[in-house]
Length: 318
Image 1 (cartoon, one colour):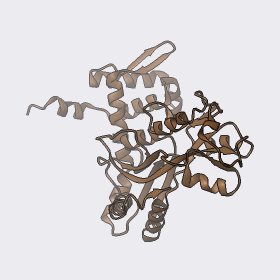
Image 2 (tube, one colour):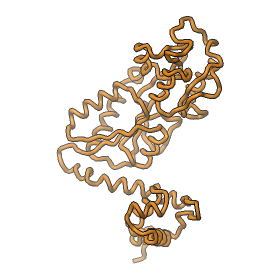
Image 3 (cartoon, helix red, strand yellow):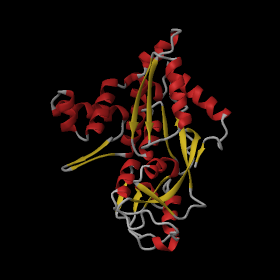
Image 4 (cartoon, one colour):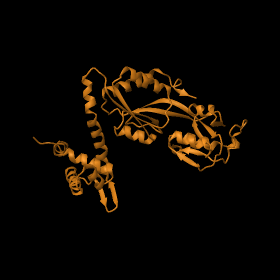
């Protein structure tokens, strides 16, 4: 019987070659991959050559001092990531045949997510399904979305600048950003501060405040009061931005409901403007193509029910 190209490709492909290719990409080169696999460099190079012969495409651009993926290589690496992610979850998926809900839940989130509604779900789920296990990775929002697209996490909690048709995303909560200074700043403790008093003052910012980034509204808040156009300090991590503000590096924006604790502790001082503050949405995101183990399916179902039954106003923190 005549087979199609796709069928011939499936039967000819050596999965070990695909694994070797994936490790070469992740290790950033043949030498490191050979060390990782405990193989010789010629053996790894030969495996890559056989894989390129199988797919009939050049996958790597290898020159002295240069290592990069071709367009075909990028496509193959992306799909192999999804493939090996699915294979690694087979043991958990097999647990679906049992009545006991088990499995590992991998969470990727941006720094310093403070959401009582999410914490309540985590607590309720832990009590209901004591056999489930968890891991939480804190990283930048762009990396969170990348991990979800590549099937490397159960779900993510992060900022989103625009919709992604490949993902399911809902607003988990809404927060408002205000401006603050630290205890050593000249404006700390002063009352009746006017917006023009902030003009030209040094500032610190989030990396995602750049134009068209998910915190571009926060950048506009700094521009409203004419803070110095070039931030003195930048970080993608909320606690580190807070640290820079508290230590007097400059004025910066923080979520009001999070900064309130440092304000009450006498470490931060709220600055104008106090009204018309930028509203920033934090999203709950997952990949609908992911094959879920029982614990993952139950958690996403519980979160979805909470988001459906709780109004956004209730999930807005001021």
